[in-house]
Image 1 (tube, one colour):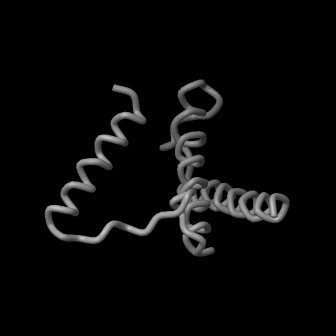
Image 2 (cartoon, one colour):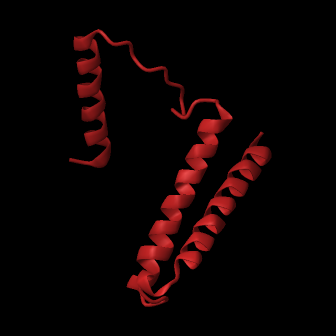
Length: 100
């Protein structure tokens, strides 16, 4: 099964379960993120964390471009994570300015 098909099946099952329990459907818009700036900022932060974990902690050591994560002091990990978060937030809001 493809990833999109799994998602559609899970949404269908969740919808039927909500109907069975008499719960209302969740409010949705086209990007499912809502218009709230806090929600969008949280999404940008989560993307920054994911990018940090994927690139710095997994990919770089696997391809031999850095040592294992245990060789880096905690302050180095915190600094790298903060850099990714700031970069992602700035990119998100600059993109929003350009596209509006």
